[in-house]
Length: 395
Image 1 (cartoon, rainbow, N blue to C red):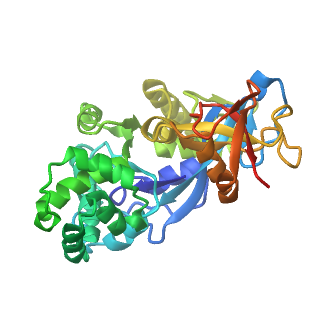
Image 2: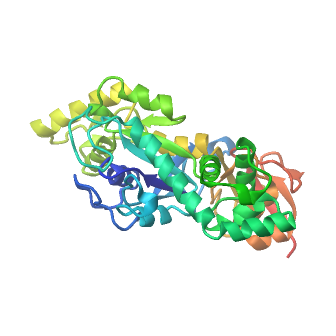
Image 3: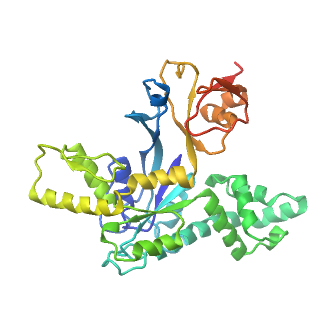
């Protein structure tokens, strides 16, 4: 799974990325610090079945910390987007192309309103942060529209003559954007369209792309720099975006560095931290830590981990399943206990899991076994969060 970190320049995207992954990135207070996309791995937390099953797990593709499974997700931090990027302004075309394979987007905005739409710094409150939500939606939707329009007239005429389904025609145009026919079909239900695709004008296509974006590239807003946000800004952003999380990426990054240096005890996602006993902390450091502690108490933490997990578990509605080869010992071929944790969409079936593990396993699927109940289940068994599943296939 890949999540794109997006937004205009100079709002803290790279700081958010660095705080989530601890990957080294260039961070500076000017637009277009990021040119090439940064890739890194972050983790989302879920309960590991090891304690419930009474076993000691030996994770392979993930981590287990005191019964909490840390499942990896790929993050992509791309160049900042400015208005009219879809027309090539700034680094727009490159920015948008970098997002083709993203399953979801985290739109990092400066909720303090201290950067304009071009990413130039100003005073807190000098810019309306809701504009950052609206313009980014439009840029992505216009980008999608241009991709559809490229060669669409010819395809529309063919579709009219052959009676092809609209979702099939559109899926062909958007196949490089990880957009499925099912997502397009859902989008088509929300937009009244002329039966004749040759009559779909720019405005109709833009409305349609708005729905396609909503289904194929859902977006959560990371309301960054919340610690200096003027009164009312957070509420205004919440009013225009369905999913929002207050974030303080600089605080998260500072705490992770302080923890690595042995100054504080902090677990990502916790609402607070403590100065480690015996740690040498200067007056300046103590003042900074007190400030961070006050803001975290107000907002319930830095929000970075919550934003990642809300994107995965609420926005994408993913669940975690554990494929094994031995349903009695919960092991794989190498004897590792509960080795792999897979994030899959809720509603996925046992056969879907088999294909996810290996294409050949899906093609030769016979049945599955629910390792918790030891019951055999069929291909259409709907997986539940935390399921431990053995796939049986033809050799």
